[in-house]
Length: 353
Image (cartoon, rainbow, N blue to C red; front, side, top):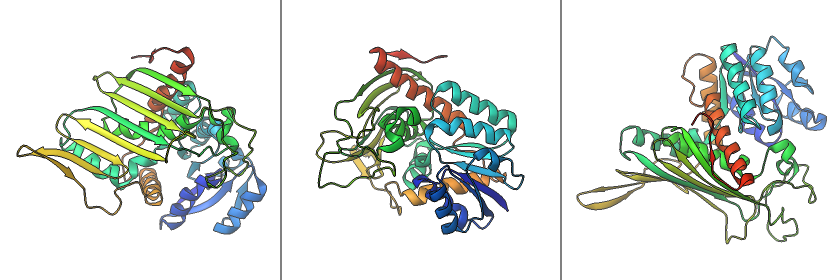
């Protein structure tokens, strides 16, 4: 049995806890959170007897083999490094860190420990992405030279720690953009990024005055607490000549929310979101193909279960790591470059490009 602890029992932890409980070769033995009330509520709900307010105390337990880190962004690197040094396998939620330097430190700790270090790029594990990856691997799209992705919320600033730059590292780029930037980069074959041009805007605030529309709010939502951007766009150029354009928002004067992920190759194209379609041509005719699978768009629960089960397999030596922390380092370089470009008002060349 693989014995697991979960550090941070906020909303995202549900997607880790439930697959662990479901897996026949895993025992969820400990939970950790700073919030006593929430910690004991979750422990009672899921029948976990060992609870901790300090992650260091949890890591001292020889009983625990692996941990999921589901805390605020500003603690990801610190806890991941401590867990790896304590001899635990680690699955850390995205983003890997707040800075490139922190990300590299996590990667170093993973190499030195010999333990599994996985980054929570859950969209890689969606059925739509897994199916498309097979088509790309077989050469059906040819060389992918352009991709573009959008996650646009017209009203969706969660508030709480999401809106506090010291805790989150930023707004929609680091919370939402990280997902689609990684997905496109992964499907494009993980080419090396060389330059980034980015823009950020903070024009609308959290728009807490809006009535008659519901949206997700963090548990500690405070209308007056917000110092992250509303909107970000970026153009990323890779060393193979391919480019990726991305735009993301927490709030925007848009008609409706939008999620779109598209890739274009010299033999075919694909849309991953809003639902999987593959575009090709045959006999001088363009074909729009709709793969017949259960979930042509991201099914969150299924994707998280696949991600957690993959982590378990890797810890048990049954599988090769699909989302290593080294990938988290590369994505962190891109995110940091977007913010740097926006601050300087100029294109940024990535280090070692």
